[in-house]
Length: 432
Figure 1 (cartoon, rainbow, N blue to C red):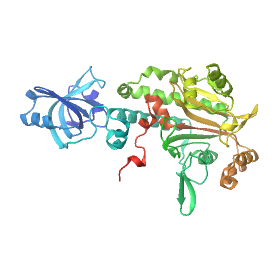
Figure 2: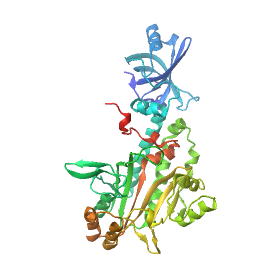
Figure 3: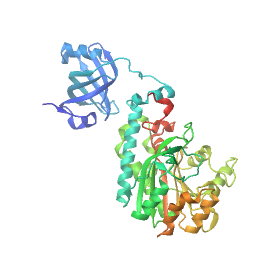
Figure 4: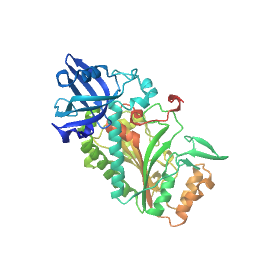
């Protein structure tokens, strides 16, 4: 019986007869030859039907196939140096499963609004396919890296009682007559996990009550947040650098085909795999912007244009370290050499993509943290459990968070972060 294979395994079956299950993405004919553009979820390639090589019934059936028809094919795999994929199949037989007309996404340019309204179908197109394959590599690389570093996966709740980053961006939920909020970050719970297991990472959806109008704003996105007991900030920066270098190298090693689909130059990513990220003090970043003629003063937070300008000065990510306490959250540890600064850092991606990581050494002193909670105007009772982490066996500890979609957008060189999200829950876009 002819072996059933996936398109991605074609290289293992050159000049062999195989069977595949596929969908049709496009079709054209040239007299006695029909060219079928095919996909199966693992890759895209071309199938060729020659009238003289098949029965009249098969040839006539192929002529009736419509976009997104599903069918089985039988044929022989050949090399095809002209395609991104490198192989094609000479079809000798096909068996139709479904052949409906009216597929709404044609092989032409569509507006963003149209594609968002049809996101459940747009996922089948080449660009979302390539993004999701790269996303999967980055996810697996993350799990593999932290497992090798001695971390365990630790899940934080989706419903939370208190805010890690402040209260202005929280989605409020009536939780059985109690106030609750959709998770803004898994960090605080991650710190509890670090005090139990030493090194943990959370990886899950987070929410911000802000409209998704640009690269820096998403109502829903995924965060990867490690927390490490017995670790100071400099050690955390070393870890972040190793992780990012490893993850990008995995993409370069495993997603050459997908990067070609996206038109992404892999050489732009290669410096990241070498590490050696500059650690740029906030003070020096301010001077850099001022010398470039930008209206920026010490104590300001960086906007997207500011981060973009800084990132364009480097061929790989750069750490901006030690921000003013006035623009960062309450839980960070102050710099012993300058109490106006926190021991913290953001990772700024190159090519204008801005912040993708943010982290700090966490304040480990019970009384100091208690005062910082009060100074932030937060309800002390909501954070008593968090203070307990310092009261009972508190140790120096650090952590950081990676915005997964922001990082994907940079790696894939996307124009808009929404392209990096597999299936955003944009309520006004979804029909009942």
